[in-house]
Length: 275
Image 1 (cartoon, rainbow, N blue to C red):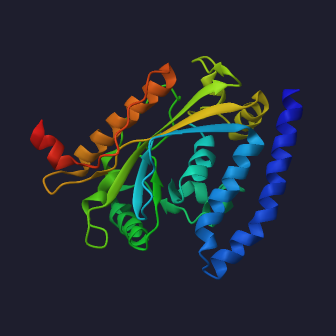
Image 2 (tube, rainbow, N blue to C red):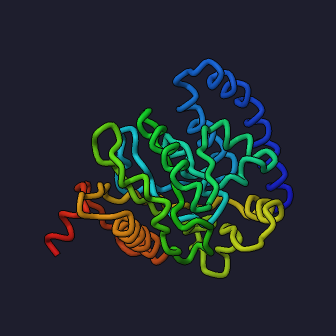
């Protein structure tokens, strides 16, 4: 039964992809606004096909040129986040060469980076250019995927872009937590989460087949208060602040505790001055 479900879901996703693929290619070639919005529509369809039930908490910053910093535990994160955030991902260069996935990443206008120090300035400038055009960017500051139970340290080097103004104003950053909480109507315990968290040396094809065959899964996406970096702050203080909020959101979602959210915008220098 699980294998049948996986087969039907994956074949349906392939059909859905082939249907919209030429539309996105055409939108990109003719530089149509549709090129920014179609990926969200596509991924919402994929969520329905795969049975991903997304619960959102908090308010997504709805103005353009926002950097979303998110914890990363699964290939499913891409589908989930794309369905609720209109934006492009910042991905490692290797993704561009992955069969199928690389093409989809390019069609979503992903920014591909080489994680080496001597490339950092060029990649930061690429991100700044995209943000100044009004694009939203989605970044995984951990630099790799985790086991879904915890948040790995946010690497401040990925947040160097926030130290530069965007169109004359501080960059708006919004931390986001993603947690896989239920399988069907039952809590997704620690022993089952590896079926959805993809990390370490897990093989993508096998992991994808097992995850899709298990059935509907609930994913909690929490949008935390937006933050801008103050003149007395650095990317390190920003990384620590975002990491703390994302950790809190993940813990709340996994334990079922009450979520707290404020729409208030923070500036790091203001928070430190009042401490």
